[in-house]
Amino acid sequence: MAKGPEKGLILAEEKAKASVHGFVEHPFHILKNLFCHRKTRCRGLAKNYHQLQVLFGLGNLVVTARKLV
Image (tube, rainbow, N blue to C red; front, top):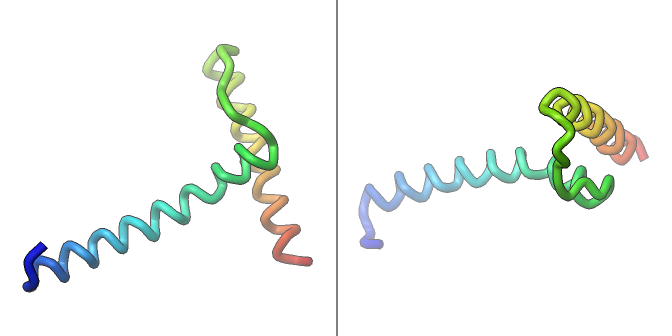
């Protein structure tokens, strides 16, 4: 990419996107690795939704417990 004002704008935009991406991916990392939730089974949309809600709630508890220790 050539140097210039466009390069600075593009790099700033990409950095902003990467910071949001990293913030959002962390809870999914906890679910996949700590709770071994690798795939969603065909149980129906309502059951899958409720299972993910419970797992994210437990993930929040894990993150909070780690910060307290």
